[in-house]
View 1 (cartoon, rainbow over the protein chains, first blue to last red):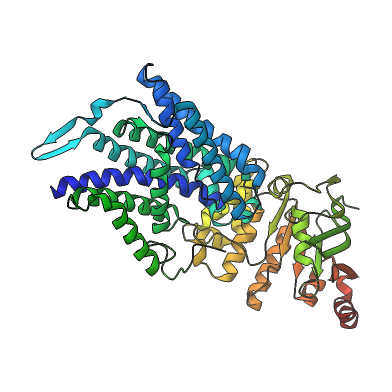
View 2 (cartoon, chains in turn cyan, red):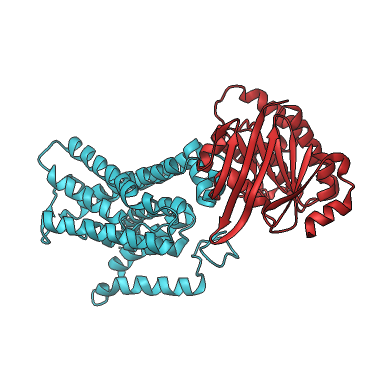
Length: 294
Length: 237
């Protein structure tokens, strides 16, 4: 049914939008695409598996702590020493961190995957007339709205948010006004960690089998979405993330059974078409021809 | 004699292997305006960026109020009391005028006396208050320059470095900017003023150094501002 497919797609879109915001926040202040963001989601999911026998609240708190601490640690250990290095070097560093962490998950948790069965009640249908939604869909929508609104509020209403917006426009100019580079970058990684924890939680509820590439797949697709929208602006990156989630879910639901295996191919086909027409992103400012801004 | 606020002693700076600032020495005392003029590529902007810690100081010494600031990071230099109004205003066009001004607070060492300072700044640059909710990018060039100076002043600097504040402005607007700088000096703020309009600045500043090829070639007092032959010799010699 079309309405149900749309609502499902909106919920999946919200999840991808959260991943895209995490990527765009870090990109804004560092001009760096942080592939390690996916590993934060995986780390959070494994922490949920490891704490599955503890009370739910403890389990969730541990998940947040793991994601935020790991995010800050990655910045401190891997990216800070490379600040000022060429973009290619830092990009390779994010791959290195992502692959290193993936190897850790493989060794510690085996490739087979672990089941982190929590909040399974959210997978029950909340039936309304002919609509059969899962409670999780409603939670995803709520969490997406709340976090995106919260992020916008932090960026627009707080001093650190103002500093982040200035740093995202021109880092050196912001520093020359006294904006502390370390603090702004650290804060972006903290926010990325919080967003990763929420995604981790929602994703684990919907797919309890946690594998070493658990967070990577969703991150790559969200990154594609962010680039599709225009990664240099938070709003366009978020909208792009949402769009890719929406398209993927909608095609998965609506394509005939014989074609549904190719839904990703259809998604990327649309992406290629869009980027051919608007290389700076679908939602980038009119007249802007490239992602780089001087 | 007032306290030396800024002292450069044989400062060297380079971009890669190319030396740009070669043994520049100068002093700015409390409340003084020191001019820095010279042809394009003379090293004027690089001298300011070296003081701010953006370009590494490869040799010599930079002292602010008697303490070395060589190797100090830009954001810390600002918090010690030095503000830069960069070339081309460099305001954040997407942010509002008020937000741009708030960014200046990042470099302010203490919130004490902020409301008095704001009142003073609004007095010099009324446009900053009048258009506070507009995107800064919608202001005219002259208004953006006023915003850039106001934003630097809100950090309560003891030393203000200005890089070509008159660039691209109409002559009447340049007069307004110079009048504002006079008022800022009246508050005891020391200034180093980089400019292309050589004669205007040589007549306005307490002392004007002519920089060429990274070296100070001559120093002019206001009474020597009309000595064009000396200026030309320093520019092209």
